[in-house]
Length: 68
Image (cartoon, rainbow, N blue to C red; front, side):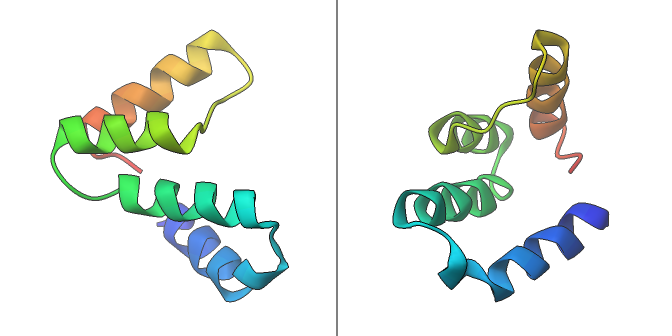
């Protein structure tokens, strides 16, 4: 999956990120595992968002369905 390749590439350069961005990145990576509630909750804690409300909704539905 493309997202897995992107996360691997970012993880290889994690030390380039500011501490608060490292924490957000780590929360996002953890949010991709677990049951639907844990994935959605992790996504919200990571404060990840898209540019539109439709994009945000789609991302949350994808998290619930474990798609990406």
